[in-house]
Length: 89
Image (tube, rainbow, N blue to C red; front, side, top):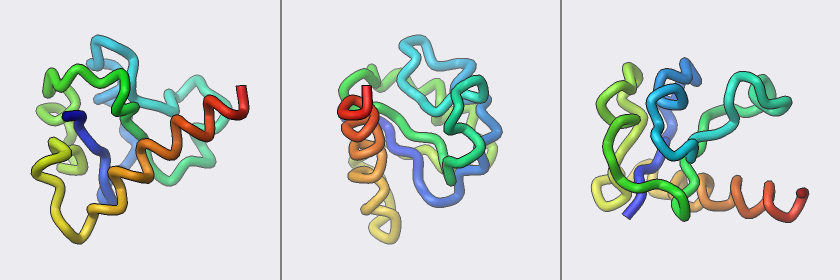
């Protein structure tokens, strides 16, 4: 199971810096960072280490299995972000 970034994401990007597998995007140096409403975790790359969960000051990162029901759509949103990026490449 991957972690999921949900609604309260503030894009402070501390989680991006700590991720050992570079699965959180967009990074600050990527062109779509300022357009994105939130950061996203690639569920196919996430190793469930918990680094993002521990550092998130906005409390926006959840293990997928503990994602609050009110934010359940964010699991698909995270996955869709990377599927769209792959199609654009």
